[in-house]
Length: 514
Ligand SMILES: C[S@@+](CC[C@H](N)C(=O)[O-])C[C@H]1O[C@@H](n2cnc3c(N)ncnc32)[C@H](O)[C@@H]1O
Image (cartoon, rainbow, N blue to C red; front, side):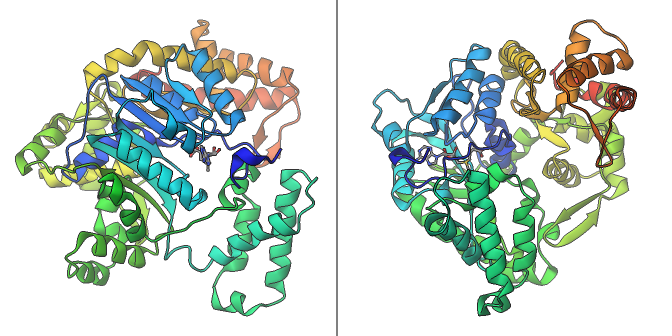
C-alpha cells in the first residue's frame, strides 16, 4: 500500500496500541515542577499530539484532562482507529489524518498549552522536522511546553549502521510484493548473514549480534516503525536544542523522573566531572556520554520561568500522589544506568505505609511529610520521585480537574472494556485522578465487566471471562505453556481473578477507574 502520501515513512504495517505516560500533560507538568519550573495549567487548556499512532494515548489524555485535544497522524488507518475510539466515548477531540505540512497549513487551530511528539522526530525527514518547529513557533502559547522524544548519539553510534542495513535491504533488495513481516524477516536475515561474514564493522562495534537477536524477538509492528523508515535522523541532544531554538524553546529537563537522582545515573567520578561543566547544554550533552544515552524524552518551554525556592516547595507540598500498585508489591530496589540500588527501608517503609493508608486515596506531599515526621523534606521529595520513576506512583491533577473528567473517563473505560470482549489490543484504562492511563489487562477488563454486572465473587468473574475467551476458541498460557482444557483455563482465570480482587481493586478504586 506504499503511496506518495507517506513520504518514505513505513506505512505498510500499522503501529502498536501502546500507551505512553510521558504524553500526559499532568505527568509533564510534574516533571517541570520537580525541577522548579512553572507551567500552564488551566481547565480550558488545549493540547496537541503530533503523530498519535493508533490514538490510544491521545484518547486516554483527552478523557483524563480537562480542556480539549487536537492531534494528527497521516496514516489514515491510524486516524480512523483513533477517531472510532473517540466516537465511542463522545469525545470532542479533533483528530486529523493530516500530514504535518497539512496541519501547519490549517487556519482553524488555536494556540496550545502543550505540544507532544513521541517517537516522531528521528523517523521523519529534515523537512518535516522543520515543519514541526514552525508549527511550535506558531501554535505554542508563551509559557507552554513541548515534549519530544528521539533516538540520540552517543548511545546509537555502534548500531546506527546496522539499522541502516535493514532499511537499505528493504529499499533495494526486498520483493516488493512480499508482506511487510516477510520483508522485515528478509532484511534481518540479510543483516545476520552480513555480520556472520566478519566485516571489519562487526569487530569495531561491540555486541551487534546481541542487538540483532533482540530486534528479531521484538513485535513486528514496532520493528517496522522503529527501523524501516527511509528517514532516520539520529541526533545529538545539542543538535535538537539548536533545531528547536527558532520556536523560542528552552530546554528544561527530561520527562524521566529518575534522571533527577544523580546516584542512579552517574559514578562519583562522572558527577564530579559534570560539576565542572557550567553551560547547561554542554553539561547535559556531556552527561549523555556518561550514561551512553540512546533515547531521550525531553521537555522544552517557550519562555521557561523558574519558581522561587519558596513557591517551588509550596507547589510540591500541595501536589497529590497515588500508588499504582499495592505497597507490598513495590520492588525494594531500583535500577539506573549506574546500576541497582536498594530502597532504604527507613525511608520507603513508612512512606509506602502512608501512601497506602485510607485505602490508598491520593495524598499531598504535605500530608505524606506529616505522616513521616522523622524524615527530612528532601528525603520525602526524592523518595516520591524515585517511586514515580519506577512507575509505581503517579502525580495527580487537582481535585477540581479530577471532578470535571470523571464522567468522560467512565464512558471511555466502559467502551475499552467492551472492546476487551473481542481483543487484547488496548490494555489500559483512563484515571480521572492522574489524567493518564493505567495498565489493566484484557482479562482484568473482563473481570470489571463482571463486577459491573453485579457478580460478587472472583470465581464468577473468571466464569464470565472464560465464557468469552473459550467461546472465541482462545486459551491461556501458564509458564509459557498453553492450557488445553476448560478446567485448566478456568482454574488459572480464577487464580488471576482472586489476585485481582486482593491486589488491584483497591488501587483501581483509589484511581477512580471503578
Ligand atoms: C513511531 S510512530 C509513534 C506513534 C505514537 N506517537 C506512539 O508513540 O505510539 C510514528 C507515527 O508518526 C506518523 N507520521 C510519520 N510521519 C508523519 C507526517 N509527516 N505527518 C503526520 N504523521 C506522521 C506515523 O504514521 C506514525 O503513526
